[in-house]
Image (cartoon, rainbow, N blue to C red; front, side, top):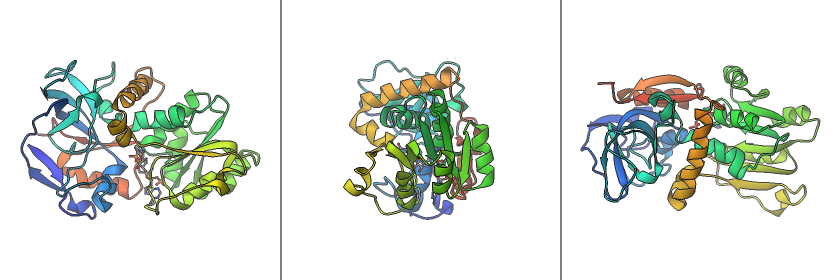
Amino acid sequence: MRAVEFQEYGGPEVLGVVEADVPEPGPGQVSVDVAYTGVNFADLKARSEGYRVTDLPFRPGLEVSGRVRAVGEGVVGLTAGQEVTALTGGGAYADVVLADAVTVFPLPTGVDPRTAAALPTVLPTAYALVHSVGRLQPGETVLVQGAAGGVGTVAGQLAKAAGAGAVYGVVSGAAKAAYAREQGYDEVFVGEFAEPVRAATGGRGVDLVLDPVGGDTLRAGLASLAVFGRLVSFGNASSAPAWSVGQPELYPQGVSVGGFSILTLARTAPGELRSLAERAFAKAVDGTVSLPVTAEFALEEAAEAHRLMGARTSTGKLLLRVGGAH
Ligand SMILES: NC(=O)c1ccc[n+]([C@@H]2O[C@H](COP(=O)([O-])OP(=O)(O)OC[C@H]3O[C@@H](n4cnc5c(N)ncnc54)[C@H](OP(=O)(O)O)[C@@H]3O)[C@@H](O)[C@H]2O)c1
């Protein structure tokens, strides 16, 4: 089978197509014949700086749609040939990938395989940010960094659907701002956001900040919170040193900071992850959220997908076409 791997860290050019053995599922696992693979920013971080990479060569890829190929010992409720969508621990840039059965889901009703490949990482993450960790209440205001990307697109829609009073986005360019507004953001700021947020909220600040950037952006987000506001950290796109906050930031206005990682949750609390994902997928089934796939590449063109996302010009979701491409 074909797989895309890298042997060293670097730019998109380190991604190469190799011929690999078809993996066999171990106990509690299934193998999936991949139809589509979703591209995540975490794949770029793995390639460029070794994020969550344990060994080289490394095969990226965290989410797929496809059909169950084989079922490992002890797996119940999944059968060969069944159409599924799955969160994987890695390895999804390939014709066949292994996944723990607990993170493999029947294709959500009415959702086509192309759309289904875009959902497993982004949608449960956004759902957790808005509801489980962010605990958004009707009428509250929200600020989302990276508003035009995969998580950002869905987080804005979920926040609106939860009754947010206003949902503000932050992006790096004008085209992304236009896209995010089309996806339902009330106002989108390009780059600098601290002053515009104060102005937009009459000086009050926002109730909830969702931050995948870290560093100075996280600090500015904290400073943009209203009294009793919450910030949820869920990434470090800026590659800044790890942040820490304490009494000086939290006490004066009673703000709190939370965090979320879907990949870690899949390991530490797989049952919670499954129930979170089911609630989140229901939002795609009932039409509350939609996630545009804005570009699709053949598996062999994975480097092009990385170039597009790495240049900060992508919006919505990028996919790799795997089955059907050969
Ligand atoms: N914790 C979790 O469970 C979890 C799950 C999924 C994703 N994430 C995180 O969520 C973020 C979005 O992921 P995605 O896969 O949906 O990707 P994406 O948003 O589709 O694309 C990458 C995003 O990163 C931003 N970005 C790129 N380089 C940046 C930089 N140097 N500084 C600041 N922002 C930069 C871009 O926003 P602008 O160009 O508009 O700034 C863009 O929105 C990533 O940080 C990812 O690691 C976390």
